[in-house]
Image 1 (tube, helix red, strand yellow):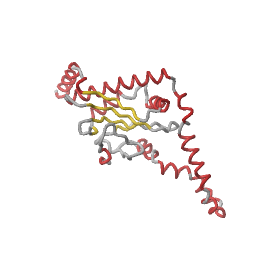
Image 2: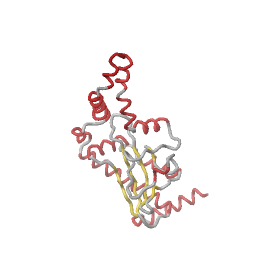
Image 3: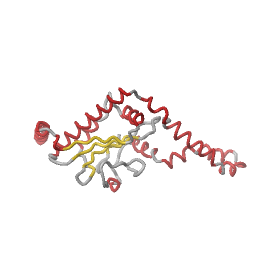
Image 4: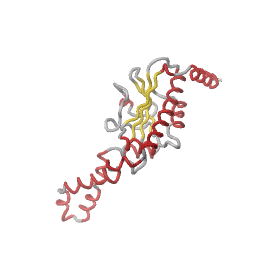
Length: 228
């Protein structure tokens, strides 16, 4: 999971938004500020051009081995396109006709209900802790379609006030990390549900007026305890 905030993204200009929910995948490359090597590698692998080049490596190797046929190999676009298609559509992704069978209807409903419950819990704590009294917050989750490799989830909290992507504190990021993707709903589970249900982007919203007085009081007590 890559939690998208100003504190975690190196190219902050990419976080400018005009409407909520803001979609990133396929439109804007996000580079982590720091981050683990595995996260960097996964984000790099999401770049289509680099994947295409990797898929065509057999042709490069062939031209080096059979140099007399190098020109003929380099001028064979149809086999190259077929190889790219096989890698992208068959090796890395689940074919569209097989996606509905990834999860049952009951599993999908349970997973989406759990996602909404967790997202609203996160948004409630965030809004109450910040003293947000009006407006609407959104927890937005985008996931890569490539099911055969490690899942990639871009998670952000977006506000209609601005609109803007909230810059979460370390404590708020810890809240998201510890709440959002835990068994029985992991990143991989949600990815399967999204593919089966054709959900490209999960957007769970919460109006600040829906936050109870009890939640706001609990946030105030937590803030006082932290200050002490």
